[in-house]
Amino acid sequence: QVQLVESGGGLVQPGGSLRLSCAASGFTFRNVPMMWYRQAPGKERELVADISTLGGRTNYADSVKGRFTISRDNAKNMVYLQMNSLKPEDTAMYYCNSNGWLAWGQGTQVTVSS
Image (tube, rainbow, N blue to C red; front, side, top):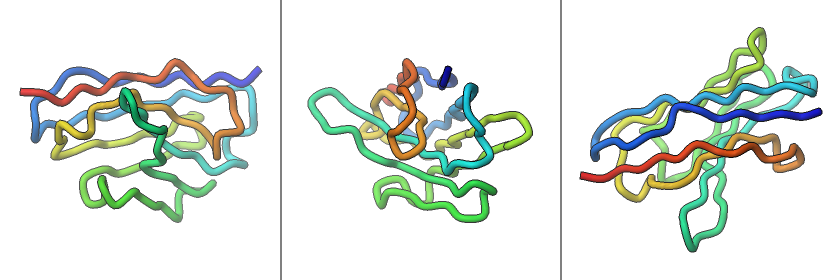
């Protein structure tokens, strides 16, 4: 069974930082690219970052480029999202997945507010 467990979210002030974690199990993690998505109330789910199987290639949405960094540790079946210089518009539920074909986890809430 596929399981994705996101953690690390919370309430932070604008300009603050958070590090999100995604623990994966039930599939061969090292064989698939991984992504972070987010969804805010009333908005479509959007792709914010992706990383190739070995971590050699990464891509970011324009809205987070230069502020967020995606990474992975295939030995631990983990993917991370380092979020710096957070803005109120980053407020959303954050999810990890692989092109959306895995069962979605519960997500982790990020709220950026003063």
